[in-house]
Amino acid sequence: MYLDNYPQKFPADFLWGGATAANQIEGAWKTAGKGLTTAEVVSKAENRKKMSMDQVDQASLAAAIADQTTTNYPKRRGIDFYHHYAADIKLFAEMGFKVFRFSIAWSRIFPNGDDQTANEAGLAFYDRVLDELAKYQIEPLITLSHYEMPLALTQKYNGWADRRVISAFTHYTETVFKRYGKRVKYWLTFNEINTGTWGFHATGAIDQGLTKNEQLQLRYQALHHQLVASALATKQLHQLVPTAQMGCMLARMQTYPATPNPVDVQAAQAADQKNLFFTDVQVRGEYPGFMNRYFAEQGIKITMQPDDQQILSENPVDFVSFSYYMTTVTQAAQDGTAVGNMATGGRNPYLQESAWGWQIDPIGLRITLNEMWDRYQKPLFIVENGLGAVDKLEDGKVHDSYRIDYLRQHIEQMKEAISDGVKLLGYTMWGPIDLISFSTSEMSKRYGFIYVDQDDQGHGSLRRIRKDSFYWYQKVIKSNGEDLS
Ligand code: BGP
Image (cartoon, rainbow, N blue to C red):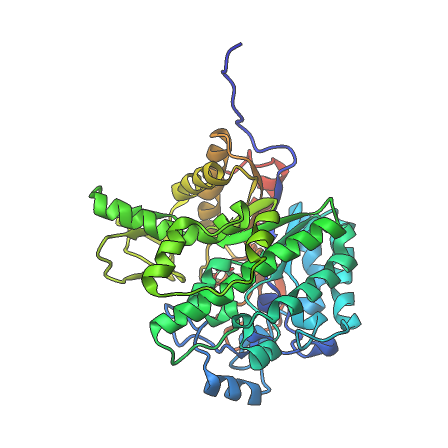
């Protein structure tokens, strides 16, 4: 027997599609009993290269609650997917989507997060979305928590900092598994769970005014609660719907050593470990030794209950999903230069960057896929990747060849990784329809194949227009990734 064969095509059942999040598309922020979410009290960034996500303290929170308009809080209006979902899904179907990733707004189902009874009108909305997807045989991929939670849980418990939020969450997850479980095979617990180390948008905990160390303590404790909640949700899903699969979701930030100097290589490895810590717990079921050391050295003490470790080890996820936008560079002596929205790393002189300063690295995706596969040996799913750019609408058209180039280069590298032996389930590019930016709340940072007529102030007809990339992606899906021209 000779070993002279390897995969050179995407698997026939490869899941092509797109990904969104409730707070960036739905709007209808007060409709049908929905409660206010943490995403809806975060105001716009002051400028394009600055992040707005964590500028929440008690004063800004009070001001946001008093302000009943959508003007300064674009995530309250989204792109009004709540009322356009049928037409939007029809457009996804026209492109040939096999999968659509979206998130459920917890506060549509439980307006205060810990209500005893679910809000039927909220549940019914996602039934309608699922009906529409079923019509076109588009597989749903649902994120249970994507950068938002009911604001009432922040007010009552300071979000995930308080262990009691775990039971509120598992009540919510049990409710949605029972309601939608038969129709949904793929689920994710927390979007980009690792970004909880950055604060409010992911933990729902206000920690302004604390020292850096106190902030870290609070955030890692909140994240421990999320890791336990994630394992408990995985257990529930497996019990309630044995055929369904749970995935974890990491903002993967591959980092390269700035030089071959071993001190830089070691620093890069340590930075990488902190990124991979979360998936390590969710896949391998225990806190890795390097984090125990890090916590001890930082004076961080994670409070655990006696059976937490068992919960984590008995309920690993079924597949590993991640977002991929950029890579970073690590030096032993960091200068703190920010690259992209969540990374603190040096610039890579070999790479181009987007208008928002995110460094573009298609080959890094192949490297990442190989490393993730080597480390976990579980099926991978790229659930976000894309280019935020300023699009120009000319004569009713958008010629976004830059977006096509970006996506083509990344898809080529996915194929290389598949040839390397990586098991990849699918690809949901980020923002198939223009939506509100997570980091800056701009509308003008567009990712979509579908243009949405709305500006940063919220003016516009909300009309949906197919961009050039729409027809390109249609061709990509039709040829199962063979025709990328
Ligand atoms: C990821 C988030 C998404 C998203 C995307 C693009 O980090 O999971 O919610 O929006 O990044 O980021 P942005 O919208 O800031 O350009």
